[in-house]
Length: 294
Image 1: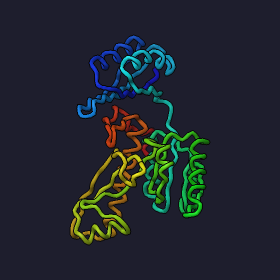
Image 2: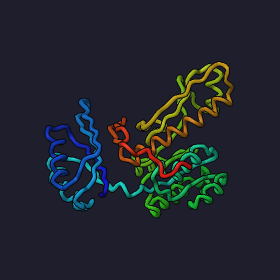
Image 3: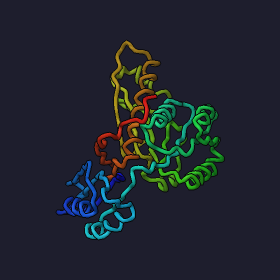
Image 4: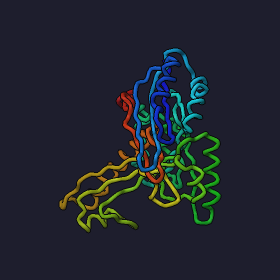
């Protein structure tokens, strides 16, 4: 039996769930997981539904059958085959903890994605990437050639069919044009502190202020640097007895975990943009399973 995921966004209305459930039943489909959210502030309805086809329905037949309902309720919707892995392009600079974590989770099947390439403005991780049989693209960035390099990166996205760009500590600011063109398809990771510290060496600043919580935030990239819709966050507690180096090491761990969870949510269709925020539904049963342990 083929497994599919349905994503729906539309205005709030009565009968949406009943209409969708009835259609899937008529198509000999069995619903295995469902989550919905009705935002009373924006008047928007969001739904994610996992189901299996017990009668041989294909994505094409399901989409054709769904069109009348979509038209009736003014829906934006997607029906995806769970067996088809999303194509992902990773970008990295000189900090490799997030890249290595993504590669490991990809290798054991915990992140069922198709990594179509890794782009970097340094050579540091070329060998690691190539040893995984993944294309490595060195693109040195300077203030003078930045527009040219971004054009090459977008050409690579088109060439590989990449559906998502993951900035695994890629330390270059993307242009407004690239952010707009890839809206909702670029995920970034950065540190988070309370209070917030910006500029050089934020972990040292946090240490000097006696911060007790450090963390990380993963979000979609927009033209406003580090201000995009948040997908995932987490924190780790630190104490007065720890050093600035401890802060950095703990920060790397939480950054890696938060980024991988954000990518996991995105590739499984659990994240919906809702203005400047997101709706993130829980993971379906079994979606965290790995093909192997190591």
